[in-house]
Image 1 (tube, rainbow, N blue to C red):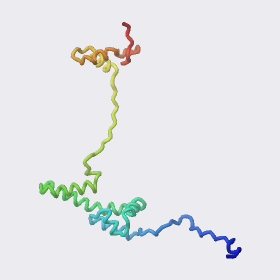
Image 2: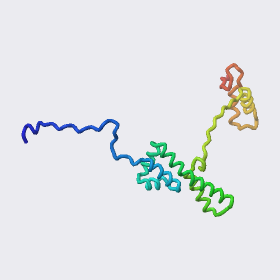
Image 3: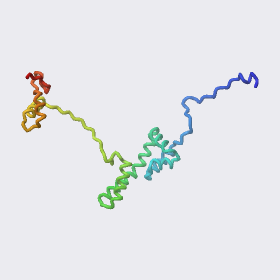
Image 4: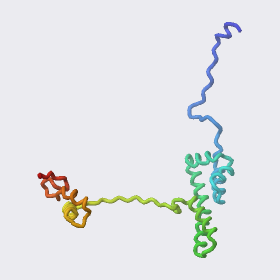
Length: 177
């Protein structure tokens, strides 16, 4: 090699314009949205829908997050078969038919409509409890003087004085012997 060839610098690779993403172009289209709706309407799972669309399941979930129209089409497509199964469960329940069919319906609904068919429902409650000092003092006094109360607890409660506005309010009071 000649000295001139060795000193020749390579040109930097051309950069892609900002905003262009790497990777394969998306298969997402309005035709995919319509197909997803009709496949979902036939009661197919997300995995089966992904196969029908020719995409990976992870892509299906990405499209659901990225494209509200796609998520809406999937949900609308799943609505009809879920309604049919729910109605079938109702019909079986009132007709009192085989337990196997009812179990299958329940299984379907627990998986497809967990918000309405889960075994455990979580409820959140808040409450404020206010104990009047005079009631608390009366309870402590009664427990401390009750002869039938457990022998070990009475002497402990006797160390506490009812609230009297002079350092009481259930606080331990030093006693002189």
